[in-house]
Length: 293
Ligand SMILES: N[C@@H](CCC[C@H](N)C(=O)O)C(=O)O
Image 1: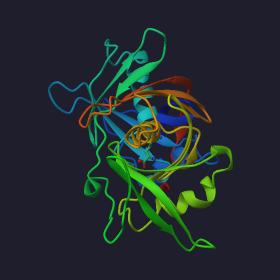
Image 2: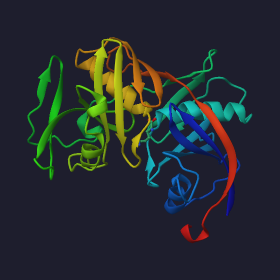
Image 3: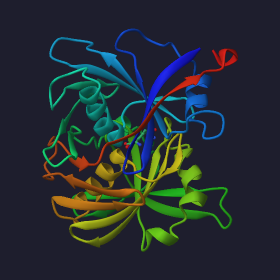
């Protein structure tokens, strides 16, 4: 099967975008993996499928698959690319669209300066909704919030780290580090991602606070490994930093692929705003392996 695609990136988090507004492609998990494969496919951290309005008052549906082929709830950098794509392709005349994802409705809008801002909705702190199993653990209190001890085994020697746990529609565990450049992202990332206390696995953030409005961040993404940037990871890290009393309401997040600006008032139920780049890299067509269907 030969299909057209668009390659996009937001702060270096890269995507294959598929237009399914005129019919679903019904790709298999193996075909999503082939699209994401950097040797046998196009290469991407996630595959984004653009689907028609699922309900009145909603402009589009946005379906996200990680590089491992698994469908996931949310993708922040992808949301910025989504609105750039539907506008550039003439699928809408609006600068701001309401888009349904697996975890709710988000609102990306094209800004006058060429960047994109997304209302990512409110962070979720209920542990069972993340989901995170805290049974038998004693949290460490930081003012009105807490972090959780997470034993990483079989690390040698075994290590216990301290993580803030929350959902931005998808699950995040954020730990503070002294220096992101020397943080053990590749060593700890897979252990955190697959930790038994996260039944749906988790995205693992490594956050260095520079000052109250600047941080550095690396994220080991569930189903994709370390990426150059993670939009929901940036939102989760800044929300965690604000709730831990370390950050102000507007923070620039330096990732390896660029800067994202995150704003959150700190009020429970208030939405997180994320601003950053969204860029089309090229268009193409690919033969998908029928044996993978
Ligand atoms: N890169 C994304 C997040 C994509 C999904 C994530 N790996 C997950 O499994 O939840 C972003 O920019 O938010």
